[in-house]
Structures are given as structure tokens and as C-alpha cells.
Amino acid sequence: MNVLLIGSGGREHALAWKLAQSEHLDTLYAAPGNPGIAQHATIAALDTADHRAVIDFVRRNAIGLVVVGPEVPLVAGLADNIRTIGVPVFGPGREAARLEGSKGFTKDLCARVGIPTARYFRVTSRDGAIACLDDFATGADLRCVIKADGLAAGKGVVVAMSRAEAEEAIHALFAEGPAEAVIEEFLEGQEASLFVLSDGTVTASFGSAQDHKRVGDGDTGPNTGGMGAYSPAAVLTPELEEQALGEIVRPTIDALAAAGTPYVGVLYAGLMLTADGPKLIEYNVRFGDPECQVLMARFEGDLLETLLAVAEGRLADLPEPAFADNVALTVVMAANGYPGTPETGGTITGIDAAEATGAIVFQAGTRDDGGKLVAAGGRVLAVTATGESVAEAQAAAYKAVDAIDFPTGFCRRDIGWRAIG
Ligand code: AMP
Ligand code: GLY
Image 1 (cartoon, rainbow, N blue to C red):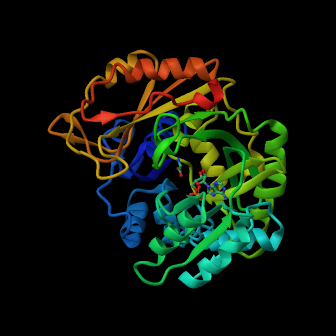
Image 2 (cartoon, protein in one colour; image 1 turned 90 degrees about the horizontal axis):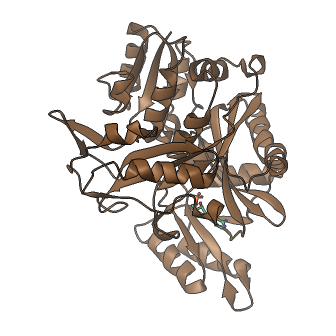
Image 3 (cartoon, rainbow, N blue to C red; image 1 turned 90 degrees about the vertical axis):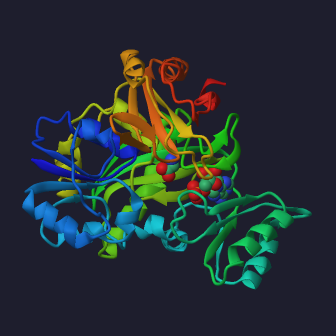
């Protein structure tokens, strides 16, 4: 079967790497792809925002499955448009993708069906936002979280630890005119990410991971798309996972099915493990990046067969997805300046030496510059290794990182620290 993979990040390189191992694969096409993805796929010169062009490509190349990596095309309705020609798509349609596209939509759905999540208000004006702050005050203390409504690539959230911080965030939010936001209760606990496949009605757990969102060691500095991850997240015990599936994920899938907008793809539930049990922080309608890299390093099944079964509503026919009984850990190497404006054009060498240690180097923001690999984005590489424990996987990943020469890049040196400590 021919497959078209949409996307160009480390997540998509990991998907391409795993799809290429399938015995059912004929040709893998990728758009827009990157030099790492090009090791496993034929790059298609396609503007993925032009849905008509994508559909033409799918027809002309006898594509049997389209796998959509990032959220932007899903929120824009690419999956719906491809489904109109009867080709299976791994990824939700526009309406179900609102789980990531609109925080307000998700919070209202949680409220309607009783899903545990932070108490919240939806606000559309500065005054309304300021007025609801009192509700999050305990005595002189005030803690709350302010979230812009739409897709924000990880930048739309402010965790405010005082009234002054909350007011500053609200002023910034409304500084450029009308806006929509959710203001919610601050939840305390450990965070974990749970991935669940859904074919519209049937779900299958697809592993867990823990991300490192802050740019600096010890979880300091600004938020990023993710500087590293490991899988599984041991804090999410089998009991807590079952609770999260039963109280959070399955009711969501059921509510979307009942509304006539079934969820087909992978649902990424960002969870806070509170003293009162798991609560939903947010949903993403795709694999995490770099969480996908660690999931793919551990997944033991045939990825093409699995994603096709999801896309065709046949998840019940498959055995439970199986993962290696080890730990995978990935370290993101980013270009200097990230998460601000990254320095592009810096040369990268040593990937072969890194992979000779047994690690896998997934590429994200890279570009082939006349045979030289150079940085072309914020997050550039995801150096991924496995081991019997988090400590072993961490040592293996940093051994590979140290084999890479990327003078204009940096990475965190402590990925996995919470699990090791
Ligand atoms: P989000 O984009 O919704 O995942 O938020 C980004 C990060 O902000 C999360 O990974 C959490 O660390 C933090 N966060 C979001 N919502 C809450 C909350 N209600 N309580 C505490 N921390 C939160
Ligand atoms: N690593 C976080 C995300 O993919 O949203």
C-alpha cells in the first residue's frame, strides 16, 4: 500500500521510520517532509494547506492511507476533505479536532459529561476576565491559569501565582483587541501524557510519556514545544491509567460519537495526577512531539497496519498495541535562540557516530544545504535511546548527543530528572 504522511517535524520522522518497517508498505510519500524523513520516504512537492492539491496527489498516486502528523491541517479540516473521496485518514475531522483547536469547546464538553478537569470560566472581555479572578482566591493568595482559546503552539498558557501576574496576563491577552480565553483553577500534582487510539467508537491505550516543556535544566525558563521526553511515565500507574481512560478519555470519545463527529486518530490527554485522581489539563488531537519519538522507539507492532485499522474503524480486530518492556528517552537539540528566534544555518555533523552508539537521531528543523545538513528551525534533532531504566536510557541518549557536533545548538542535560530523582 502507498501511504502519504503529512508533516515535517521530529514526530513525523519517527512515524516515517516506523511506517517504513511495515511489510505492507509499498511507497511512503511525505509532504513537506525534511532530510531525515527523506531517508524513508519520497518527498512530495505539495502545499499541504491546499487541500485540493493534496486530494489530487492522493488520487494520482493510489494512496491507501493518509497519516496527518500535526494539528494545524486537522483543525483546518484536511481529514474531512480527503475522506470525501473515500480514502482512509489517520486523524480527526475538523469538528473533533476542536478538542485541541478550542480550549472552551473542550472545557464545555468536560462540564457536560462530567469529566474531571480544572474548574473554569470562559471569558471574552478584559472586565469579565478580571471579575472572575476572585473565584480563584484563597485569602490573600490567588493562583489560576489563563489560556488563550485557539491553537497557540504551546505559547498561549500563563500559570499565574499571584493576582498581579493574573492581571498582567489578562491585559496582555486583550491588548490587541477582542480575544477569547479560559481562566481555570491551578491544579497540583505530577503531569503525565496518555496516548489513546480511537477508531470512532473503540479505543486502545497507546502508551504514556512525560514531556519537559521548559527550555532550561531543572524546568526553568520559558515554555517550548518540548525539550525531551521519556516513556513510559511511571507515575501513571496501570490503576491511574485505567481511571483516566474510564473517567476522561472514553466519555470524550463517546460524546463525540454521539454528536455525529466521531474521533478517528490518536488522542493525547495531558493529565494532572492530583490527590483527587487524574484530571484533564488539555487534549491534543495528534501525537506529541517529542513524545512520538519515544513511543515509536518502544512500539512493537506494525504501525501501518495499526494506523490503517484506526482509519478504517477496525480497531476491535487488532490485538492490544504492544510496547517493549524498556524505557525510551529523547533529548531535543535546539538551535540557539529557541524558543525565541532560532539561529538557522548552523552545520550539524556526527549523526552517523551518534547512531553507531545504538541511538536513533530523528530530524526536525533541518535542511540539506548542498549536501551539508544545517539547522532550519527551533527544534532541530531528537536524539533517542532505550535502556532498562530511565537512568540507562538517559546515559545512552546523552552518549549519542555528545557524538553530535552542532556548535550553534544546545540541549537540556537533565531529561528524565524527575523519574531518576
Ligand atoms: P497546556 O498548553 O494546556 O498543556 O498548558 C501548558 C502547561 O501549563 C501544562 O503542561 C501545565 O504544566 C500547565 N498547566 C496548564 N493548565 C494547568 C492547570 N489547570 N493547573 C496547573 N498547571 C497547568
Ligand atoms: N510536546 C508537547 C506537544 O506535542 O504538544
